Image 1 (cartoon, rainbow, N blue to C red):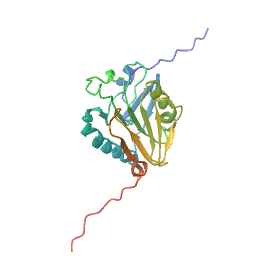
Image 2 (image 1 turned 180 degrees about the vertical axis):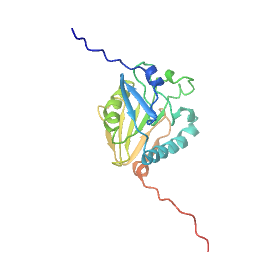
Image 3 (image 1 turned 120 degrees about the horizontal axis):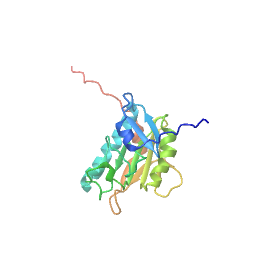
Image 4 (image 1 turned 90 degrees about the vertical axis):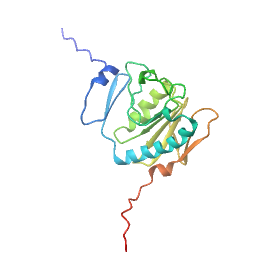
Length: 195
């Protein structure tokens, strides 16, 4: 009698031991593996504009250590989920935790999507982030020049036409960033010509 082989369910430890030279990002959502190509220059420009703005917002609040703008693993302590959002903010009560696996509360996650990650970021990861009670989730699409958001409890992503807004905690000043500024093209200035 033929018995089909059982598929091996991947774990966070499996992902930590993988090496994929052509991809800087390997993620696992509920045991399903996702591999992303290197981000485009446009992707990185959008991400860095938001990083700089959030640094200016969080630093006066004493929350700069809450910002994760580089490699960092978000697992919520599970063994079947490992994601690396483009940009995220850890709750101020957990900002000084020494281990990524200790992070449970995430008030803000930002994903800058590409054509290959559109469905994953807009559907699969949005559902994951809702399940883990992420306060605000922004999805930025440089190709379509659009921004969407989902707040805790929202059923869907909502388009944001004018300004992205968020508060680090209740009573904190409002962070706001014009959507158009995220996607503006930057002119490169050449050296000035002397007479």
